[in-house]
Length: 508
Image (cartoon, rainbow, N blue to C red; front, side):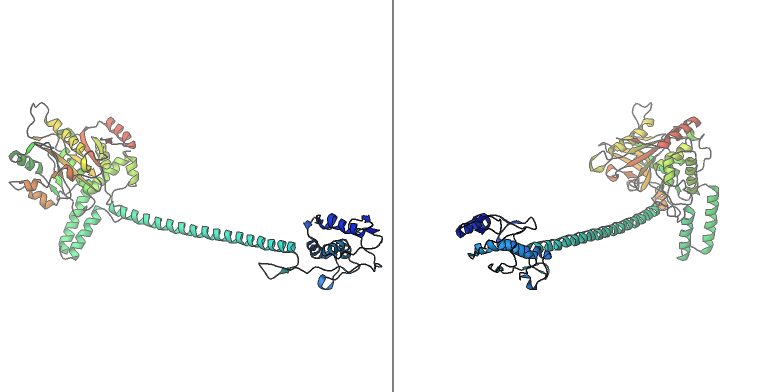
């Protein structure tokens, strides 16, 4: 009677036992008795047990010898018939009793020694380690991969942190450069608008005289004499009149009566004096000089004598003080904040809103009109020219069926402001083809050139100095300020309240 050492089934013929082993065990699915491993060949199963479960075996040389008292003998006892059957060397055991896990007894002398399979070795592709088990190798390689992933993650986080640090440094550097550039631009802007602390009218005038002395253009005695005159003028608050030119309006009127056959109509403002920039305000005083021109006209008109009782034209430092007084009364708080409520002792430029506030403070009804965009071809402002024509022609044509070709209106001049400069409009001419041309007083014109116009026989080349055609006024924006009557004390206060949110009339 033969007994299967794997499953314990008993059968007589040897041929039946061989068939049983082939069909029942060799062609079936082999599984490890110590772990869930299954579906492997006999050699792989034996190699797996020898390597993966070697910790359950006693130490042995070369790990290939079979020792009698180890647990590996029991496993080999199970696997021996399979190996013999697969190799065609099956040896059947006699009728011997099997205990527990069918391990053969020590007295069995008829058993053949198990023939060991050739040993397989697996080298790690990432280090020098050699493993005898593919599964151990797999676990070992996975440790490599886990360590690699950790390293990659650490490197990525380190690179990301470095990139963020570099970006922060670059942003900081850019912000510093931008702040430096803004500070430089602001300093240039302060210098351009006279807010850089270099002193005002008096300081600039003294510097010019000191420079003249150092260059030999002025004697020291003359320097001290002129300095004393300047101090006296500043103390009085009245302009010394040294840059003033009177009589120009009369000269223009005489010219147009005798000349200008291509001109259909001319409208001139009321009598106005021209004020040129001087050494004390050259480069920044145009707004103040244009106010002096406007004021010189208002003081000659009966309508404004009640509110302009002084009858004198103030000096530039005095005009600055008057604007500050207007701010203290509550006029144009936004403009006052822009200048930090201080003009005296500075070279600050002023514009249309400051002229408006000053006229309101003097009880002059002012109107500010903003031509904020071009209205004609080539960035011209035809609507500005039409507005000026209406302003001057309205008063001169009252009660007249046919207006004179050359008319002296009762209207004061108009303050004209654009980016970087201001001028005074003293009239307008209309040619026979309909073209309009402004007549302006520019404080930038030298005093000598203006006084030369008073010589008899004013010619067309001289009048060209005053003419401004539409093609010559192509700034993006223009503002005008006109005087249109006197305010009562109540109206003045209302006008000041309105100026707290000052909004110009816009055309178009």
